[in-house]
Image (cartoon, rainbow, N blue to C red; front, side):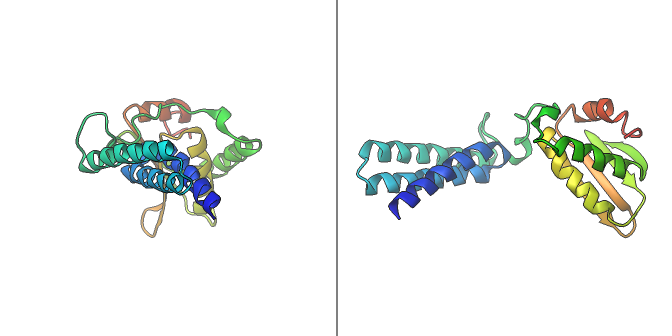
Length: 187
């Protein structure tokens, strides 16, 4: 039981730390995981480890308070969370078979493209409604996030607007999309 607590705390710390740039909630989760690791260290009488984990937890709590308040330069805010992610598409990030699936899904969806318009730092792509298209776009979006983690992607299926794909991101995103998608009209 004690070993499971230590393993879970360590796994939670690594996972939360990796996800910190996405949201202050992950900074708080990292702090909680540090305190769980400290509890494990105390239970196993590893005093130095316990002290270090308490310090890490305290630092993380302080960072979370500043991030949640939107204060202090260098501390992430929800609106700034993606600014550390480079605006590049890494096609080598795919696992075997994913790149081909990604391309096939886009070919299927783009054949139904009805129009595209620039919107802020991205594009709004409108598609002719066909059965299964929202699911196709959702699967494509999940694969697109692998190679282009800076993108914010939304698939909408409404009664009036039809099927809409919104692609946006930090400054510079639209220029990259224009280069990758041929001005989006050629997507």
